[in-house]
Image (cartoon, rainbow, N blue to C red; front, top):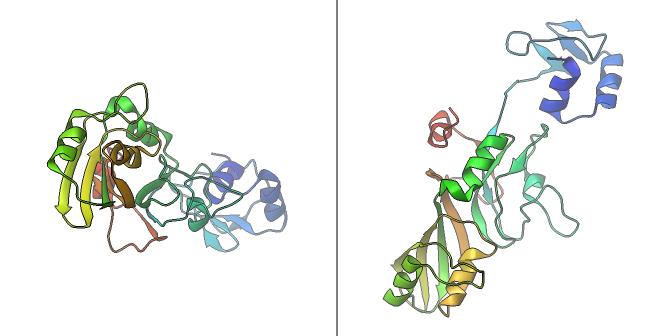
Length: 234
């Protein structure tokens, strides 16, 4: 591939900036200073360095991010910090897969693999998403049955059947919910439909991939090979 495309894709810098860096002599291939951004390179077998640091070529990258609350699932936002503000990797095309509400925490994938995003988000794929929540009041067997049958949440069609499990009871109930959709505020609207209020919501799994609980809110790491295999990207 062309040298400028490699640097743009991997480093997220503009073509004009690349030209300036090459002119300054800060870009090398196999230890030799480059003279042109049009130079053809094979990053799989050649060593390409920028400012003395070798560029590690990867066709796609996959990050598991533990989204904190009060954080927008977007590339940029004028009012709030975004999930992408936490990601130091600036390669071209990195985006969150789907959305979590502003105050919802937990598992979010960050990748530049568009096909993976499509497969995980497509309604036709029925990808399971697992959430844990704190609910004001006691969640009943009737609520469990309502979720299983598909509750009406104000849209033309009711929500698809969901699995609701009560983990602990009390003035605040801890529950787990498994859904195969991703409608706007879906979990909150489902509980509202049965007269309950969500106090806290966290996604813990998606498509068979579970959140690494050692990641603190705002932290992320690259997926392991076995985790990529779970998503069909190995």
